[in-house]
Image (cartoon, rainbow, N blue to C red; front, side):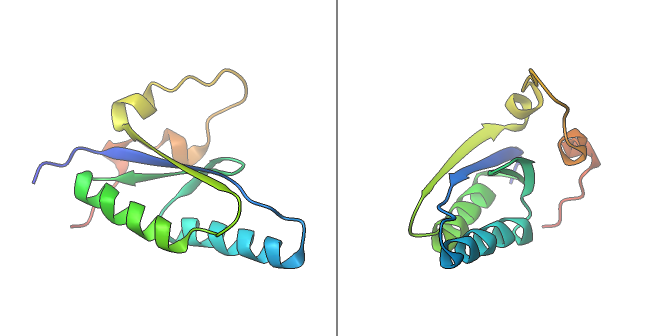
Length: 107
């Protein structure tokens, strides 16, 4: 199987009005971090996927762990598209600077 690296970008707006809302938000954020996502910006998380099968697997995991309220969006981009992203204001994160060549991918 050919490894064609992709990035999954999860963007979300979740309610945080009640204590229960905040707990749901924290649990969703924890799920993302435990599943290999890193925070690109507030409420925008990114992870590397090694191929289309990996993308599909993480899409399913995301749909199973998604909160019932709020908005969650998923965007799939190629590694090249991600690397060509322009930062108009601010700085890139340390995780963002790590290229695919620096990552070890386990089968």
